[in-house]
Length: 224
Image (cartoon, rainbow, N blue to C red):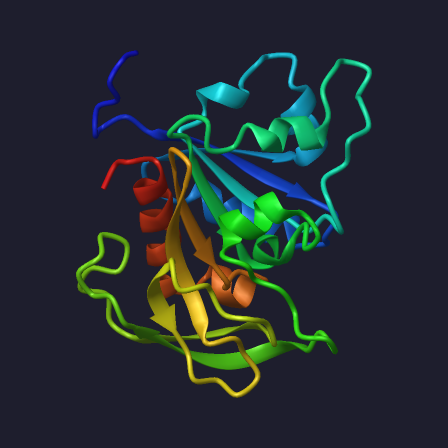
């Protein structure tokens, strides 16, 4: 296996599906991340890619919101979403769950293990355009090292918090939000980073958010 140089761009699949989002704002965000070579794609394209690129990415950023479990239907080109996702963690390919992806596949134990057991409360409270104060509780971790606390305008979830075997990096005391906002985990051989923020341009353009996003990808890929 060829070792990656720190100067090489990090090849990343950005996987979407089953949730509306600002396409131009989102793709502009990833195009402007220094050192990142991002390939946004719907999850069906990720599974059926005839270029056989799935294993060539250093990290996978999930921004999808499929419910309740991954589909097991076979595509004409072969394979299914469930089969593809079942291989997560078999290698050191990093896994990044961004925003609504932390709530995807709520009835699939494997995704719950990856995410840290996150689920919406019974009434599923979701609030948009909230001013959320983000607090760095792990200033020595590579993702949040020396990061100052910051505010974002974003969507909040009334959801459970990350489980005890997660390393919590960012929190908030917002009354309409889950407390844990960013955390890391290990899933089999893969580093996992989960980040609740990321609804629209109001947060895409936020410097603190961009810093955490970039470092999160770098950390998942084993570059920092």
